[in-house]
Length: 328
Image 1 (tube, rainbow, N blue to C red):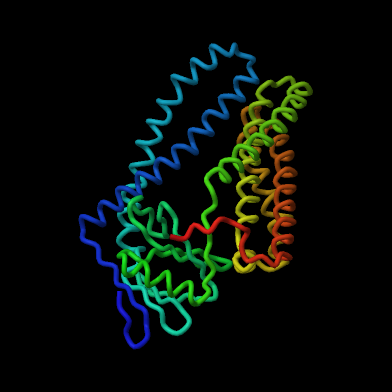
Image 2: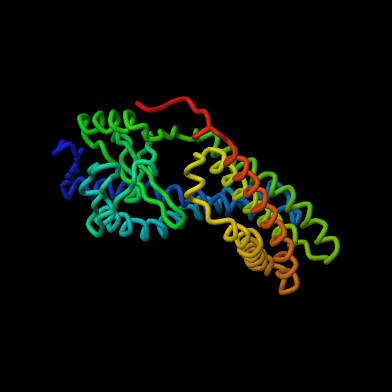
C-alpha cells in the first residue's frame, strides 16, 4: 500500500501457491452452494411426486434418505469438475492486480482490462466471507470488497489484503463518504427462500389439485407444485434484494421506464410460460400448455409486485435499510 503524488495505490501480489489455494477454496464454496440449490430442488420435486402419487410417508422418506446423498454426491462431482477450472481462470484473469484512486475514481487493473469506477457510484462492504468478481476468499482473510453496478453489468473487487492496506482503505472510504453496505443476515436470506418457496408451494399444490381434478392427471400436482416453489423462491429473494439495496444502486441497476414495461409485460410472462411448459410436460403437451399459461400469469404478478417494491424504495430517502453496522 502506498501513496504516489496523492494517489492511493495497492498492488496485491500473490504467489502461484496462494492463487491456487484461493481458487480451490472458491471452487469448493461455489460447488457447495450450487449443490445445496439443486439438492433442495431435488427434494422439493420428490415431495410433490409424493403428494401426487399418495405414497405412504414411510416409503417416501426411505427413498428420499437413500436418494438425496447419492444425488448430492453426483452433483458435487459434476459441478466441481466445472467450477475448479473456471475458478482457476477467473483467479488469474479477473482478480485485481492494481488498485488506485485517481481523482474521484477507482482505477482497477486485471490481467485483461483496466477499468475506472467513480467513487460516487461505488459502495463497500467488509464481509465475513470475502467474495468479488474473481471468486471467494478464505474465511481467515479480512478484506474490503468494493462494488459497482450500472444497468448492464456488475463488478466487485477486493482490496486491503494487508493490515496496513485494510486500515488505509477503510479510512479513505469512510472519510470520502462512500456508502457502506452492511451484510444481509443469513437468516434474512433463509426466510426469503423458506417463506417465498413455502407460499409458492402451497399455491402451486392447490392449483395443481384443482387441475388434477379437472384433467384426471395427478402429476398436475407435481408440475404446479414445483413451479410454484421456484416462483416463490424467486419472489422471496427478489423482494429481499430490493428491500436491502440502496436507492442509488436501484436507480443504476434498473432500466428506463419503457424497458421495465417490456420486462413486466413481455419477458416475465414469456419466461414463466416456457418454464411452466417445460415442467408441465410431465402431463403431455396439453399439460405443458396449461402449466405454461398459468405460470405466465404468476410470473407477471411477481414482476409487477417487484416493480411496486422498487417504486416504494425509490421514494424512500434512506440510502440503505437500517442494519447494525458490522464494519470492523
